[in-house]
Length: 466
Length: 152
Image (cartoon, rainbow over all chains, first blue to last red; front, side, top):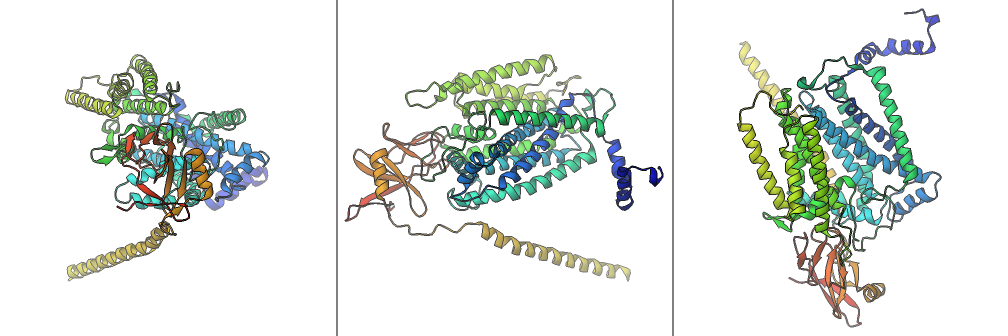
């Protein structure tokens, strides 16, 4: 250590703090923190960081919006209109908040998907996955509650439908519905409750969960590639090497965000990705065609349409919400279900589950967008048969390309679940079979195929590489 | 001598732990109960008697062939079909969207998930699981239109 008189001001400040709070373990930790390299592309390690970046943008722009936003029957819609039309750069702040929200969820989804594909959730990082899943749920809650705050027509009906599915929860459904809405129907009381959720409850929850999520990652480090895919290479130092790359990517994200905000301040105009204010909510106006939730809820919206009025003694929406609940729970528990990855063995079934989930959601989302069905019939509504037909072809094309890539380049050999998703789309869209019947058929087929594979003694080089 | 006293100590400790546990639960309950009661909204105030259509609402029926009115705890669609006024609950039984009357097709239609009902509220197509509850339309002595829930 140099003598006090030769120290820089920064060193003196550090010395002052170090004397009081003993910072040396922290410095030690930062100096030795490494990011594993090898086995898979580095790009997958940045997505948590970009999600965090967009979350920080959300906090900053959200606070700015709060300076003018007034929740209330006669003020919610009007104050948003005031922000976008009168307040200097108000349009900018709102547009940043909306774009960044969508980009945050997109980034979060890719982050989650990459964790899935790389099996980064495997022992001992199960709880990092679970906290990440909870953060994902909170992010969806942010999106859903924020959607209502402008109190426009679109928000009103999207919230009516979204909250109505609460009644499907067994026993406490009706209670939950009324507590969420502040009454039996969506009214301004619902907005007050959503406002409290959006600006107080969810931010606190998100920050607490994020703290735990990041703490786990600091304690355990980032997940290295699995034993069978690892090339022995030294990791790179987090500070400053990885952090500088992180910062560079954040800068790219900021440029992307600014570009989108300036070019398309009200969104790209795709249903579910737009935020034109439109008309003020009127609880006594009928719902209009083309009411759609935000894009990340579209698959659930479409599933609600695919279910018949009654199924196995349940009402359609109850059954649909039940199916979504089971799928979500399975996704949340993946680290505990994937026994092979926990033993550091190749786990191709769960790689394929990730691809299958993506194709399953893609088909429903495309259908919800009425892709290919916009050649309007005499009713002026998109034709569901034409939509299914076009969407099935798209999913089939994507599925074939992805499967070929995985088979040829990545040497994967396990395609049952992704195959099931493709076959379901083909049965429903190209052969005109009922969506649920097609789903039931492929579930049975996939279950039989998996049972056969699991019973067969594994050859020496079983499975794919991931 | 040591063992019995140890066992008494354990029992006493066990009892105190139990007491603290029960106390904590009681405390939690006494906090949560008012919060849960607070969160559950009061049921709608106001009469559940017949709703009288205003002049504006009647004008809307003339023009659009239907209107939606609010009663104490429901939204009601009042529409004109073949010269007579009919009324149904406007809340779709599927996911609670507000339905509309399509005079051209003579159906009640919900735009959210494409549910169709006939003019008596029965499900014709789409995902709604139950028919729309019916309301009775009547006129009082002054000629005003009244809408009231159907007596079972």
